Structure formats: C-alpha cells, structure tokens
Length: 388
Image (cartoon, rainbow, N blue to C red; front, side):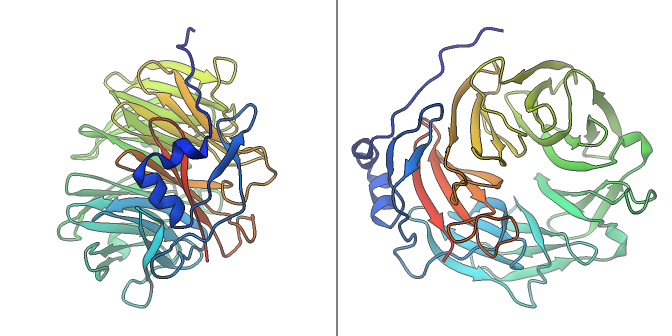
C-alpha cells in the first residue's frame, strides 16, 4: 500500500497563541505545550494549569461518554452517577447534573436526538435518561422490562429513532446475548428489540449509523453486523478480512471503520456492499495503533483511540484512502491527562478526548478524569481540562 506524506506539526507555544480561541483557552488555565516528543505528535506538558477560569472547576468521575449539544460539551461520569456540562470555549464547568430526578446509574454513553440529550445507564438493569440541554432539566427516564435493556454500552440516533446497544452477559447467562433496543426519541415509546442468534450479538461493544442501516461491532465473534434500522431486518454479518477483536466502530465517506483491538489494526469496510476494503496496521504507516478502541467518524476522517499502555494516543486517518495524518501521544508513563481514553466528540474544528484517569490518580477506578482538546486540522493540543 502507498501512503501520502504524513503531515507533521511542531508544538510551538507562540504559534498556538496566534489563534484567538487558543489564546483564550490558555489564559483560562489550559496547559501549554513544550517541544515535540520524538516519535509522536504530542508534546510533554508543562506544569498543569487549573482549567475553568470562569465559575468553578470541572468535576469528573470516570468520564465515559461525550456529546456536543446546545453549544456545550456534555460528559457522562460513570462512577459519579452524574453528567458534567462544560463550556468548550474555555473548559470551565457550567453545571453538574445529578440527583433523583435524573436516575443516573452508571451513565455510560450519551447521544443527541432532536432537541434533547439521551444518556444510557448501565446499572440496575439499564435505562435511558432524557435531558433538556438548554435548561439541564430531566425530561423523562425510560425504563421497564418491555425495553429489554441488558447491560447497555452505547447509544446513538438516526433521526428520531434512538438505538441502545445492549451488551448482554452470555458468560453468566447464555440466554442473555446482546441486542439493540429501538426507541422513539420524541415519545420515549418502544419501537422494537433487535435480537436473535442470526445477528451474532455475542459481545457487542459499539454501533454506528450509515444511511438506513446500523453497523454493530462484536468483539467475541470477530464480526460486524449490519441491520436495517426500520424493521430491524438483518442485512449481513461481516467476518474475516482482518477483523480481530472489533471494539469500536465509526462511519465516514461511505466507509465503516472498525478498531481491531487484538491485532492493533483498523479495518475499512465498504458500507454499501459490506466488503472489506483493507486492514491497516503499524507496518503500513505511522498509525501508532496499540489495542485501538473508540472510533469516531466525521465527514472525511476517522479518529481512533489507543487508550492503554505507556503511550495512549489518538490517530487521525483519511476515511477514504486510509492515509494516517497525525497521531497524538505522550511517552510519559503514565501521562495523567491522556490515559485510558474513553470517548471522543467533535465541536466545530476541535476534537475532544475524554480520559478516565486524571492528574491526581491515573487509574481507571479513580474518582477523577480529564478532557483534552485538539485542533483537527493540525493535531495541536489546545487545552487540558483536569478534574477539580
């Protein structure tokens, strides 16, 4: 395979501050960068600044999901049973949503549908909380046996249809495989539950919408399942072609991209035919993959996290050609602001990365967490938002 020249970018503080938005972010307490680290496009940080100059500091507790709505960034805190609202212009905390009216119980993922936000709760059998992003108020809590929630791990939307991916638990109960619960976002009513052995949902981990269909990554079956959103009919189960522990999934430019955790690669699939186009690994170019996980597709690119190890990173890949453009990492062991990468979201020209660890305790079960903002065009880190 032939690749275009990989773009490289310096980490010059003066260049960063030439952009007014970046300057505001740095003045608000974001951590500026020193010289570039060899082998990565991510610099060693200077001393940590306190993010959130306006109001109080952000507060995270194992952030697990990100979404942009109403001009704000929303972060689900799996261990804190809360959602943190962030001003993306300077990283300051706007509000922390918690309490009985929200019924948050291990909120794991978040998605926007219509004018509201929907949070998938993994605990107590599963539920979905709807909130108004303008007021922050709880609208309703969607729960009940008719929804067949079972260990929800992801949520997305196609128009007014919510799709909740249930991981199930076949290790403990072979009769409890994964499934998709479809919900009318405008009413909270059940549309249907997609399940059955033909779908190959043994250990589903992520889903992404492409036109009228939804694609689901199944880690145990080494498969990607394509399902019609309307009616829930099975289109195809895609196997082979390099799929090896598929964990994350994203859609861009007519292609489905899947992270292959076991082989540290990424597989590109033609969304219209289900054919595997190619599988890319570190032998093909500077992808920097290391057990890749979360995948986010934009109009032209896909962003793939490698969340673990001594150099966690995010790789930017051209969705059509497979060309790697940049990857962000840090060779510090561990980097408390860029470790255990758990979620991605795009806000205009910027990528937000959630880390389950943080400045005070870089471990997955720590009551902490952080966010990192990266400029999409250059891969330049703009702002770090640590937990208070």
